[in-house]
Structures are given as structure tokens and as C-alpha cells.
Image (cartoon, rainbow, N blue to C red; front, side):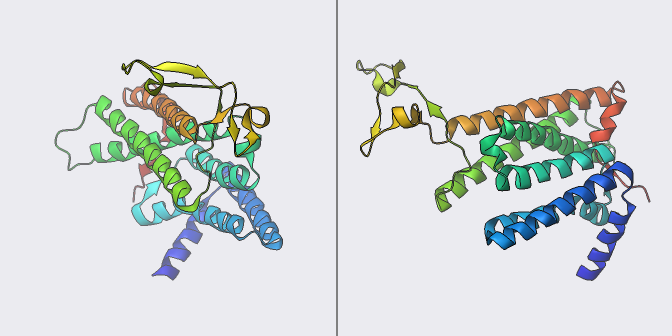
Length: 261
């Protein structure tokens, strides 16, 4: 079974042409170079990330083989770029820390891609001959939007869980200079009070001097990720709705379809 799957995926890879093939090969070569380097450095976690990236690159070919789902060239290239940027650039080369808004850009793209996937699946079922009462365009778009937001929330739960279990920092912290809370209301009323952070000493160390404020333990990062995911999902939803109305044929570059036999 696995040999047959391997042979079919290998055949699908050979079908790649033009820009898609070039992007695919370039990224795989860069990942292999990174893998060798990480092994030489003895960094096993990063080596595992490289191997995971190579496996994820097979997803479009696997879905084509298993479920006859065809990815447009533009969408497939974006997926390769997203995987490479997230794992190789973001994690291994620390772009998440060194490049401002890099994480937000990727989450926006993820929101767009996932909305496209959810929209595509709903559209495929909606166009099935078994469906006697097709959904209206707005409901197909809503399926894509909800799919995108759900995957975004699940990812944030995953980040939170990993941080709690393994004491990691996937939910990057943000330095804040003031705190707003009803806890500070001395009258006991349900009215928030804002207190500026002017001094902060932790274990005898001046955090105001060292970090410039208090650390919010990842809340701002999580909410920013969900907000930009929302923006990406909204952008595709508008594009998808226009596509269903016959006004945005270019959207087909981001919509997966079933392969015709």
C-alpha cells in the first residue's frame, strides 16, 4: 500500500511544471541544505522541523492521489512558500523574533488559505449531483470563513498547550507599560482602572530598566494572530463571493477542485 502511495505521489511530483516545479525544487533543496546543517550542529529539534517541512510539501500531491483534489498552481506555490517561511525562516532562522510583523503576515496568509480550503470543500459538495437544494453563495462563503477561523483558534489552543506542557514560548510575549483592570477599583465597582507601570522589580532585578515594562504572557500575540487570521479570511470571503457571482474569475487560482476523470 505504502509503496503504491509513494509511486503515485512521485508521479504527481513529476507532473509539476513551470514556476510550480521551480519553486518546489528550490525550496526542497534549501530545506535539505538546512537539514544537513542542523544535523552537523547537533540540533535535533530543528532537524525534525526540516523533515516535517519535507513531508508537508507532499500534501498537495497526496490529496490529489487520495481524494482527486487538484490545487491551482498559484495556491500550491503559496502553500510551499507558507511552509518554508513558517518552519525554515520563522523557527530555524528566527525570523519570528528578528523580523517585525513576520508572524502576523504568516497568520494573515494562513487565514486566506484556510478560508479558500473551506470555501472549496463547501463549493465541491454544493456542486455535487447529490445535492438537490444547493446553498446560496453567502452560505458557501460562510463555510469557508468559519473553517478558517476554527483552524486559527485550534492553532492558538495548540500553541497554548505546548507552552504549558513543555514550558516553551510559542505565544510570544509583549512588553506593556500599563495595566487596565476592575481589580484596581478600590470602590469595588465594575469599572476598570488603568495604572501605568512606573517601576517593576522581579527577584531583585529592575524590569523597567531591562525590558521597559511588564510581560503580558502571550495574550496580545494570541489576539493579534486571530485578528489577522480574521482579516485574511474576510479578504478571501469577498473574493470567493465575487467568484460565485461570476465577477472574479481570477479567484479560481486559489480554489481547489476535483480532478475530472
